[in-house]
Amino acid sequence: MTALVIFGIIALLAIVVVQIGKLSDLRSKIMGEEDIQYQNNDITGKLLVLFMVGFLIFCVVSALYYKNWMLGYGPLKSASEHGGSIDGLFNTTLFFTGIVFVVTQVLLFWYAYKYRSQRGRKAIYFPGSTKLELVWSIVPSIVLVILVANGLIAWNDIMADTRPEDNALEIEATGYQFAWNIRYPGPDGELGTKNYKKITGLNGLGQDWTDIKNLDDFNADEIVLPVGKKVRVRITSKDVLHNFYLPHFRVKMDAVPGLPTHFVFTPIKTTEEFREGLRQYKEYQAPSDPNDPASEPLWKTFNYELGCAELCGIGHYSMRRLVRIVSEQEYESWLASQKSTYMTSIRNSDEDPFKGQLLDVEVKARRDAFFSEVDKIIKDDNLIGKEALRLENIQFETGSDKLTAFSKYELDNLIELMVNNSTMTIELSGHTDNTGDAAANLDLSNRRAAAVRDYLVSRGIQAERMKSVGYGQTRPVEPNDTEAGRQKNRRTELRILSK
Image 1 (spheres, rainbow, N blue to C red):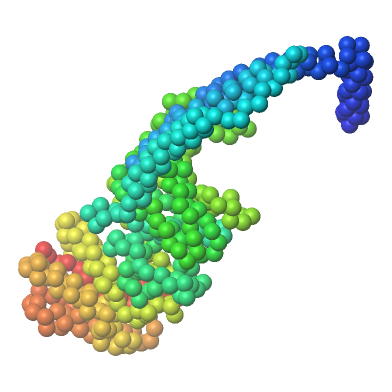
Image 2: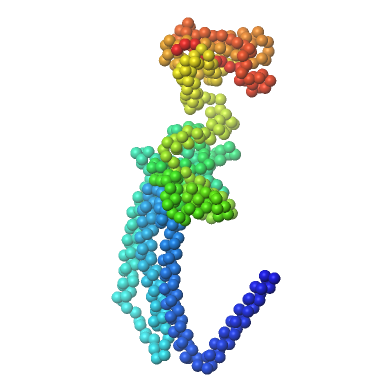
């Protein structure tokens, strides 16, 4: 039925158009072709002037109405240190081109009206004016020189690279179809080297694991940056041309395969601060979900975003990533929770060039963990003589009381503890699982505890400050019916008897 009504309306419109055409022909015959032509010219000229006025009013009103949604205006002022320069350039360019736009439109439509064909008027041949040509050549040239000069000054300032004294944070963004790989430096503050020939299923970036700077680098699912800190983004691509675009920070740079680029900027507003700015505008009080009036307002759900500003393929839209700007304290907390790619995916795999070796970072981590647990016991008198600290990294060869080479580092921690606490006495206890004969297990646990004590004595710790004892399989911490449980039961423990 609806289709029939639509068809009827279209047919009626066609009939109306045909009838208007017939009326126009009849009118021409009655009044004469020339009179009709002059009359039409007059009407058209006046309508063009009216259109010009309406069009310019529309341009101004619509710009004012939507300014709070446009970058650089309303609440969407730049959230980076350099962004003001870019917005200023844009406004300067808009000022001059706006003048040209308005003047051009006014002259275009006014001349169409003023020089419309009228009875008794003849066209005048005008060969040209040297003065006029000079004016419209020199004036635009001067304006362009001003715009280009300002642009070059801003470009040299914005695109300046970082200096050592800037203490900048450098991260890396690698685009690929269709996502971004965001790599951060670890505690050393430096990104490791890459080689595309080293790309594998485990090593998607081709990081060179023989470069120790790579060992603490990590990949993040989002971009988290501290406010007020200069950031250098190293930008590259694995496949096709992408574009690293952070609109709210006025950051935009191509990611070119085989040609690393970079951009330096300093965030000046945290995500929460930007949200509070949006909160002052009624446009951002609207529900974030148009279908749910009870949903959070737009200002509260706002997030900075990273997008790809190149049409890199059908999955282009999925390259969106969230960007969070936080305080320095929040950033340090987030940083501490991240795990390096090497330690979580590569360590002790076939791709690990340090397989079977103990790294300095692991030695330090083990030392920090040991003294953290010891401090808890020392600070609580109720734990003295009661709390047993498992010495995770003291290990023995299978079925033997011979210490492994890697045990040295934990033993050195024990020596440091005893040297720094000259009155401390301790108990060293050995434990086994229930595999084999119970008496043999008891003997093995005694010999292992004694081996630890003897090592400390050989390094200058008084024997009378240490007690060694073996408990065999009598004190399991896990059931012995699984390999994981048996492994936990095979252990050496430290008990602080006195401070």
